[in-house]
Image (tube, rainbow, N blue to C red; front, side):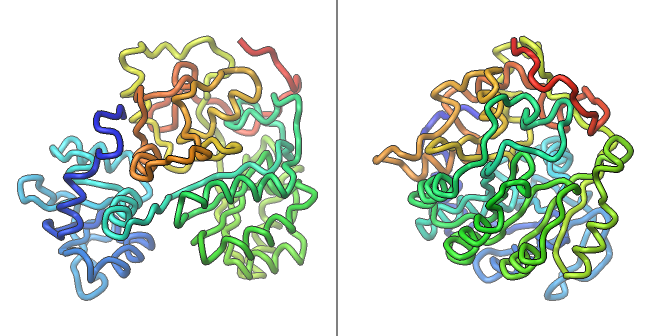
Length: 387
């Protein structure tokens, strides 16, 4: 989205939110919706819950769960989306005449705006930090371009700490910190990194820690104890027959469950083609802002030194020389005169052009990308030429 009133994009709706001038309906009767309800039920007027799969059930405080078909933009209620199928829900609300950031929000977006204007706290929803370029696999069309990075490194712990300190110098709280790679588990000092994050940031700054890996390297007993101590969610990918013999997901699941570790096993037999290598994705320049806005990047935000990117994949594209980041593509956290409302808006998808340089080459996230390839196919040539 293009900035039209930098630092003040949410002033009007924030007044209405903070003065509780609306009634609210939560779309999604799952874990996230319930947690949001428990936190905000005494601060805002939540009058309904809708969920297509749980319609007819009774929810917290006896609220009935209704079908989303009852929603009507003319009744003036604001919808807060907590379901996982975000873009599908957004599309349905758009068709009903609702407007994002006016009468519907994702709950994370609402929480960020509310906390900033009500409590003067900058609460970020997601931050990824890459601790290593090395991976246990070498997948074609990897979204992090890992097989194509020629100067791979393991991030020194001191640099990881510097980046997080830089972030938390301006951000008060972070919902999810995602530790990734490459394959985060192959970092030789992985356990020390977990202890640093857990002891210095977890609880005081970070609400949830997630680890991104493949089912190749198994966590040690000490590592599993750290997972338990810091209530870490272990997320790993399973590419089926393409990587069978190297990945051993069933054994990993058994190990995690025996320890009571929270995990998410993402199974893929195909994934979207990011477009690499191509000179252009064919999106006309006058449509790039719309393309960027439609792309689902809520779990894509990443830090690189003092640069905060709303689309973290742009960092990887820059690493391999595929696409150079424009100065307007990121927010410089080293700026001594940071406007925190402006940074909040950037974290919610606003910038000066409404898109970034990488938008000219990327085919986009799954909700807007019709190009698919077999997942987990291994690359033979490790460093193909960049256009």
